[in-house]
Amino acid sequence: MQKKFVLVAALAILALVLVVAPAAAQDKVTVTWFVGLGTGSNAEQIEVQNKVVEEFNASQNEIELVISIASANEAADDLFTTLVAGGTPPDIVGPIGVGGSNRYADLWADLQPLVDSTGYDLSVFDPALVDLYRNAEGQLLGIPFAVFPSITYYNPGLFDEAGLNYPPQEFGAPYVMPDGTEVPWNYETAAEIAKILTVDANGNDATMEGFDPASIQQFGLNFQWARLRLMWTNIQPEDWYDEASNTVTIPESWRTATQWIHDAVWTSHFMPNATYDASEAFGSGNAYSSGKLAMAITPLWYTCCLGNSVGNFEWDLAVVPQSLDGEYHVATDADTFRMLKDGANPEAAFTVLQYLLNEAVPSLAPTYGAFPARPSAQQAWIDSKNAQFDWGINWQVAVDSLAYNNPGNMHHESNMANYGKATDAVFAFQTMLFSDAGQSIDVGAALDELQAEVQAIVEES
Image 1: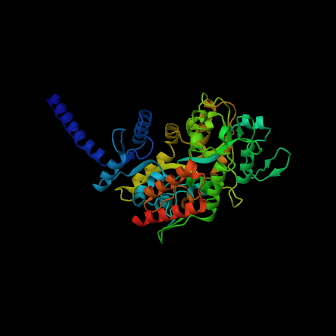
Image 2: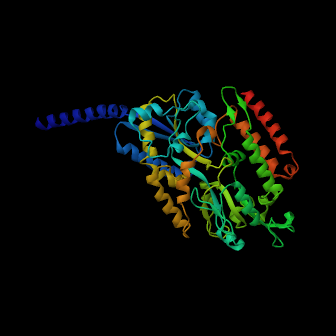
Image 3: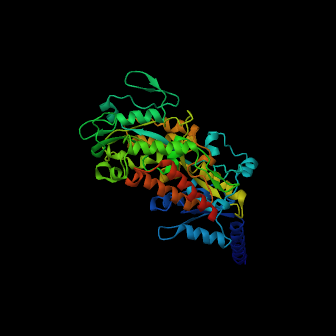
């Protein structure tokens, strides 16, 4: 009888567990994280992301984080659009860049109310970096995660051969000319130095009378793999789109910058045109890595493509030149995670977002190849790069550059009506500018045509 009672009691307890356990699981708030609109879809990244999800779920018992990764065989845009249209949007999306997020600009949540209500500490980031994520209305649509400031990569060996001092590695420091005079490190100085560093087959540099632009063996400067708007906003950041009136204006500073670029390619010849750039001698589109380009102004992510075996030279970093206004302005590529404003559980989603931006950074940043915006995580990234490039690169240049970051409305991927098509039009102009067709153009007239074209595009929306 006693055994029967024990058995019945045990069965009753088991039944209670079976009833209560699912109920407890159901009490957890589900938060979904969508990956695929940016990086995050290769096998190594998927493994790390899944581990982050597992660790978050094990760290607490109130939220169940579920990840959805668009594989290489899926159209991530289509899948994401279907989820939104079907009324089942994910809570968090990322990592995603500024330009990539523009297609869905109306979907992102303003995080400022959640930052305020939770006391989330934004003071660890430079205010300029936080402002990158604010839209024209002042809404905070993201929090810094992965940042790639523009910097000047330079080849010390080519400077040594030319008897030139290296470009400065500190903001505010002058450039020291060969005769010892100090001049501002600006785009005018960069051009003068780049001419000396541009050499033809006979050993003449671009300042010499006998220089032959048809036989250039070494160039002084380029903006490696940069789109034109990044070049423009490095030379002088501007807000060129007025949302209220839906109008586009190419500012005078960008006209000056375009003429500077045109002259660099076609008059002074210190910047490679499209033919030179595509040639095998100059890395088939990766001129700086060929070891035959003295300086490249490009974002920090370019470390991805400078392995020791490519170019066979030891490079270093310097600050970008001062812009046309005499101040330093840094065009910064940036990826982060964004929340959807129509998400079902914003408070829980923000809890997950904080985890991705804090505890998960040591795991996620390396797998994304990202320089962390969070200062406490930057040294680990620097250590990993020093292990790869072991000759003493001055990474402090990258850290210091974040204080000079361009704000969101002057970012080189700032949003505008019909963003994708407008971006394509600017890239087509850039392609023409560097091709043979660009050699004889009237820059001002060509920019007038571009402005009219982009204006027509934004009016289509």
